[in-house]
View 1 (cartoon, helix red, strand yellow):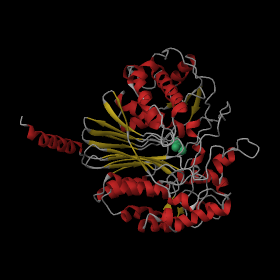
View 2: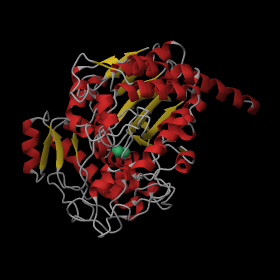
View 3: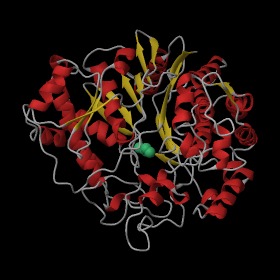
View 4: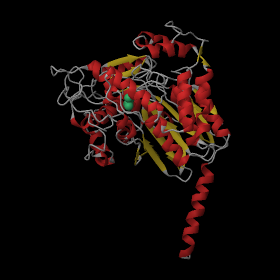
Length: 553
Ligand code: GLY
């Protein structure tokens, strides 16, 4: 062939792939059907997957206040129709006043209440800047259009489902500690009920300001309201911290599993490292032949996670402060083969002594998955850390503050058997981002998006995502079956497998006979999955949160 024809041939091939990647209708899946509907409507109006994700995320900040947010942070992974992936890290940053010993009292003792429940635990929020950055790069519709549904839902209110009312009622006592929070999420101090309408007028006004000028959050009236609250009550966050916030554009972490390409979250998330390291180990076994939820399969999944989490504890932190994270070694197939060599297929291994015992899990976060007609996909996970974050509404601004600084380690050398960690990579420092487990993923097969997945759940997140993926790739599940299947989790320490109660009793008994300690939970995570099969998008919302919804364009 004439050499000058080569570029044209490549262009045709690429166009071919783009056409191949197209689907008749896009799809949005999130933890609240109302928010998914907001995103799907944006797709119907010709918006891109990023437009729909931005609209869904703003709507979640209204209808899912436990984790949807303006005052938190997260990660947005996207893939364009031409196959370019991008990763926006809008994780919160520590204020300038942060330092490694900030969670110790004057007596030098660790102060857990300050670490997880004080104004000092508020990181500089990244959500508004992160969503704006995504829109700037890949948005098609006007910015103000994307905030419209959220403004309407906040201003006019929405009717509470049984689940939403129960979640608010469960936190009523905590809301009572802060009058603006109680005023927003109760009826004069009494719990709201199913069927009540929840309007959030201050939040509506804040959203309307952001629709006109997003920088209001960092340098306008919204910023002033945050700083006023901080100054009045001993918080650390300043006007300079807010003005200095920037999302980071990071290189997507890439791996492969049985011929499927996996796009995942790089540090400061550990989600991608844990997921890809575990998958590399599992690739050496015939899981499909063992059967889903069989003792042999669950044993190997737990052993793989145990090893991936041990590496997480040792190496992971904010890459801007930890130059030497050995990701290429940890994620190599050779290293996985070495780790497989340490797994006994009949017996549980023992995790090393409690050098890196884990603190209590703080499970609230939320995930949304989107695909549009052109095959562009977004996988977005964001969080306030705890359910309803610090449970503290910014007076006059109507949104909740995060307590994300709780994701930093307790203090230098403070590693002990009670669950504290004091390793260096994740100690608090000015402008550092705390280590996360959030794990938005996009899977690619034959050049086109094949699956989008993610979940809340603290350190269980990569395990939940791993399960959705194994169900599809190894066991041939459809999207809903992949979401519904029982899940397990292992995080090295404490040395036990967390199992959902739906795991078959015979499997639980066999695992115990192999030497595993089990901890049973009713449910783990809340995955929102899209699978592209036979040229169509299949959306699966997770009924573990009954309001979750998959809405087609
Ligand atoms: N705050 C939960 C996480 O980032 O993993």
